[in-house]
Image (cartoon, rainbow over all chains, first blue to last red; front, side):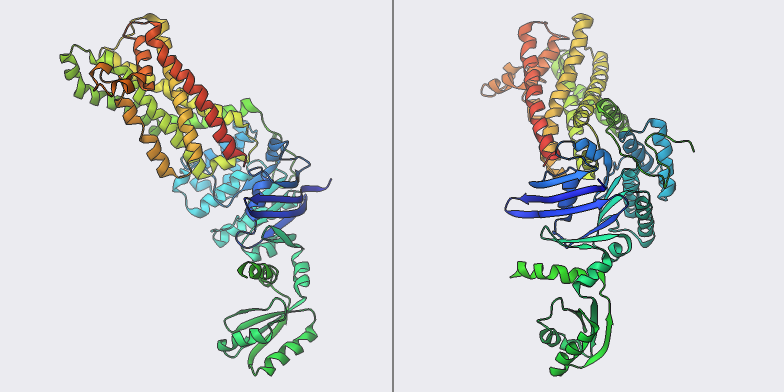
Length: 312
Length: 271
């Protein structure tokens, strides 16, 4: 078995609402998978099921072959989790937090002390080692939260929006850390609101919405799936945007913001048809550019039909 | 650097982990809560606060009770102790709620920590705090005339019973802390019942001195029962009829709230 995490047909309902609808997903050791989806897509529910905080209503979960339903403590012993909000004892110092959670994961007192010192250095927290956590800045807490999750390395690392609220320097520290963990064989699942983060870090990206997997592949594969190319138009006047959208209305995945309109295309030749439609409506164009789509555009293209479905 | 079990040098492959076991988990969880309860804030709650109350009650009531031929130290020491133990139970629940709101609780639930060890560590620390409060209040009482009239065994029984009462009460407050998410609401719910329970008991005044319609309430109150048992084990006549209601109350409360806490914990831990 090569998959460190294996989800098959995972289903979770809250009353009438289906939060996860037959989600299947495998993450091999040494791979970073980015889980993308709008708010309420089911990302945190998926993580809570995986980390034994929620019991699924259907499907199976395996973590290193262990089933959370029958062997929850073996699953917990192999997953390091960092949730959306820092989970630290605010009354004690960073060092004491690291020692406490290190010991809970099986380290002896001496080992835990030594390990805490190393983590404080690695996460640039040595200066604040003895300050009660309640007095630390948001960024420091976030870094400490990650340090606590990694104080004893485990084969699976789950990060729920780990860089929310981090400054660029801390974010880079975290990214380097995720890469280093993956390089030594840790399977990483991370959710993020920042598509750039997924593009940078993830070997594979899984897009979910309304509890369903919409796409699963590398960043490049997803960009190809959505339409190999993206035609970006700048109109001479933002007042024309609505008319332009209407002219292109039947093409899939068209997005508009300000005076800019983006149209996914399968082939570069299709640009002629797009320009023809706008010219037909007498809409002048200031600039045109044909490139690969950004991950943002992939995301909107994939999740937009579902958003329409709900508003209907 | 030499290789250590469980610690992996940066870059080295990670090997699968195993839970450390209940005994280890209990020790680690207990150490953290114990050091919290022996911190400055913790000692204020368990030792300083009861002593301050003792002094206030002494200044207010000692003269009044003396006129009626009642010795303050002998009569009121168990009452001050019961009040102190109520504060221990409230503080324990507040700590539990703080762990829930800070996310420490969730982190514990996603760590390979034995769930039984979590509950036992909480109760063991509460018991230790109850013991600490008991010693402080008894020492203050001894200065004010409190005595153990029935020998060492009864004195040990007195302390043991006080600790058992602390645990029973802490199970009750833990149930509430596990059911209520809102910290302000929790504080109100925990502090509301303590004063009526204490005043409507035989703690400060004999049941006969209450208005007739209140007397049945005072007589059946669990707080009256507990205070009467503490008195029987120290200053009043040691008979089964005096000690039994309090013992029965504590045994019943232990059983009831052990059950409600387990149910509430399961509900939080396994959704």
